[in-house]
Image (cartoon, rainbow, N blue to C red; front, side, top):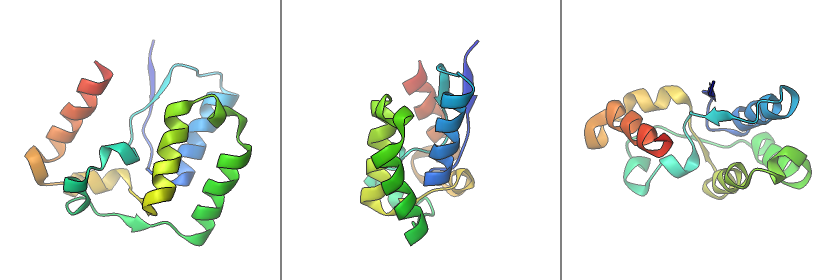
Length: 116
């Protein structure tokens, strides 16, 4: 039975996801929340974001340098690098305000296509 994690696109959200993968043995856990790759240039102006705090940037650096689970997950590692590079974070609720290209339902359709 596939399991999913829905969390924010910030260092804490990714850390929680990694904790579930590491400590619960949930190797088949899918991250359904917003990911940096989901925010295209076109969407950046439509989806509210917040700047990463210094504390969150430091957390990203610690995760990149020392999290053993992250090193085994190339996609999650790439997403963390993208988050660091953009300096932005997105909360799941931010997508509810997304109005471009068909709104939130279009975004959900995009995620479903990736899963399928």
